Length: 324
Image 1: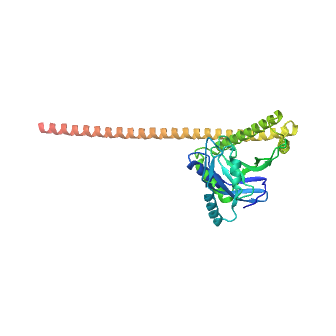
Image 2 (image 1 turned 120 degrees about the horizontal axis):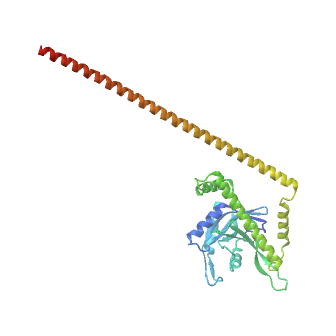
Image 3 (image 1 turned 90 degrees about the vertical axis):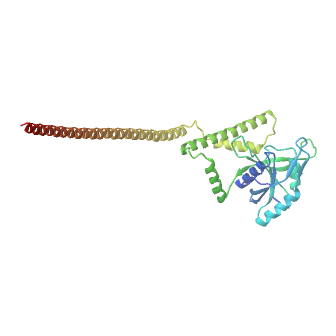
């Protein structure tokens, strides 16, 4: 059995996300379960690999479920032969929310790791943001003296990749992105998506604080301290120095845009003038060629008429001689 302490952060690699999405699509878009492999790097849990496990559950009765232990053990033994550093660190399912039987499945996984980490990976995300949520099971102590119960505590999670994975992800994104769109449009789209994601996070913080004020959620001092730190990092826009600096930077950017627009307009006018001159010269050349061809035709006709007159005169002279 592997033994890991409670991590401060969980890093999920892109290869794990691709494997989970493939597992999800192969089983007709139903909830799937698999095993996470990785290692502890200090206080950070690095999830670098995964594999699918046969799992069935009753839709009407979540307490009835089946997890193939033999398949899990055989697959882990084969993965261990390939890379002994990757050990079982937890499990995943495609949620997208916590299910009532997750605690029972988590207890089964304790045969392989003492503190398994659950990572819920949303294979069909509808909102912007990271599609992973990490949890670890903890004992919940009740104030009324009732026996403790198991519950999941949320852990910070993020997406991290090594250099070979980054290269592969860049190639995938290059195929997904629209090649006809320009760099500016792509930047605007990315900024828009970032702002939408930030708006979603702010809405979540607002809803959490409202529920805490209403007494629907318990007060978590660590969360409040984190929100206070975030608030302290925000700039004070009421300061005169900040407003002046912001105005100067905005004016510099607008000046560059104005100069670029002027240069673009001048280049367009220059191209238009060159195009008109080229068309005018072509028309003049065409007219001159037409005049030359007309003059040649006129001189040829004149020479032909002179020849005919001379021939007629000669014939008349000959006829007069014959008569004499």
